[in-house]
Image (cartoon, rainbow, N blue to C red; front, top):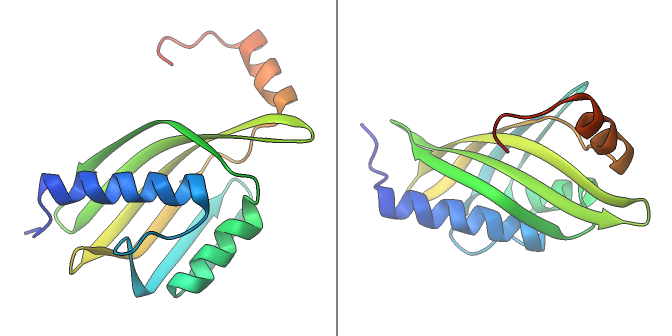
Length: 137
């Protein structure tokens, strides 16, 4: 049974969004020894330790951006967060959708799996808008 309550789950989700928008890990979000398993469309990366996680984030998303949508649900052992990111660089505004599953130990994320759609360039987004009409945003 999870010891994570809905209040702490919301706090963790909000801290995680802050992390995504600043590329800095807020106090209490991750354990010192956090393990991360990141799955991309055609690649997979792993790292251990908060500093290595932050370095991975900064290396893969150096431009700061926003998280226009996210939602979180408590699981038996942690939290699941579904989120979207947008950021801008010299090529324009980029987009991705992701799902994070985290084990929580002592109120902080200790094991994190992230599944990412990959980064959608402005051209991919335009092609998608042209080809697909989404029922819900």
